[in-house]
Length: 250
Image (cartoon, rainbow, N blue to C red):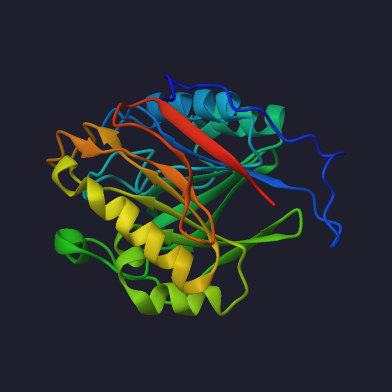
């Protein structure tokens, strides 16, 4: 079982070079402790997770930097509170995929590197009360990392078959999602990840909130993980906040 921010060894980039010239891609899923509406505190927790993961890509849950607070203010890409996370990515060479409300009233995914912060994706499939505050994005998103194609998703996206179809159609190796489920719906995390993996023959990385997240979620599911294209669980967290797990995709 993983412990709080259990270190994950980075694959040696000089080893295991594939026939296509790509080295294995280390992907981690993190479920940090969340302080609702406290972006500064949450950015520090994200930075700790990035340093502990020692991965090239670190996926975080939906609205991970604000908590699931639907009235949380937009977090701009130049927000100085994100500086600790940018520094952690610079020190480790990681790409962090973190969740915030973004301009245009979207639930967004930030791509954070040592070079700065950009909005990488806007959630397309809104759930529940989200539509009262947010607008759906209209475009799937894929990032290229060291030659690997990483498709992006947020929570309800993973439960809509068309979203995975449209994203995978862009050519992806990994489907990376930040989600939030209540502890009563823990099985949903695995069910959706497994379905996407076996249907589209892609790796799936899901970062699932754990503990209290705001927005009425006093106990979230946790159980973040990485699934192989055959639907096998390669790495899986428990239910406690502060865990991070990962796997090398090869």
